[in-house]
Image (cartoon, rainbow, N blue to C red):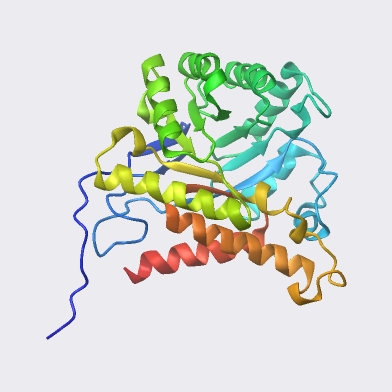
Length: 316
């Protein structure tokens, strides 16, 4: 008797979301099964790996992370263009590090001017990611929304204290909101409800459930992402059927293990290769947990993760 794989009867479906505008768009979601379970359902759109850049030259990156971008790392628009033209990035994520009020505290007007230059420099959608300092993020994201009107950029992280201000700007200037919550299924659902009450449609919404890099962080984040995915697909919870985005590269490369010299930790191998593999392994975890847009840094890590996506989609 032939073995028959048991199948789950899914009653829900991840919503389909398009970010970007005109001929600079990317579509995610639409899945009606667990990630890559194509023997049970369909995934009309592959998860997308986005490449991150910073809005300033990083001063703490390990050499392995700097190397692929060393010729453009001091010029964000050119850096973004290289990610698209040379590495094939389908989405660019701009980490707004210079706006941190505890560091350089770049004014919102200046940051918005740079943001528009980056959007104009590339032929793909752009996501802007703040520093999670709510008051400053609200100022910056609202100004970016204004100067990038009609481009359907994605504004992140939009936490509960600033959801009204940034949500209203997203509605007025036609952008996507990234709802960000601290590793909790109920909080993720509640923020999506609040944004919906404000008038933000599900078609302009992405979920950021919080992303951990290593250890307990990745374990908790994986579990919560998986539970969000399960609730949306098997419990028909419409407010948990929003595509997920994970800011992975930013977390992985700031871990001390990504830069520790080999002489300090000889059993962990060469630092550059170690960090690349850490990022690739993290990517596999979040893709299996249900990530639809995965933000990564190193081209080699991205290549490994993309091969995994392509193999899983081809095998099913």
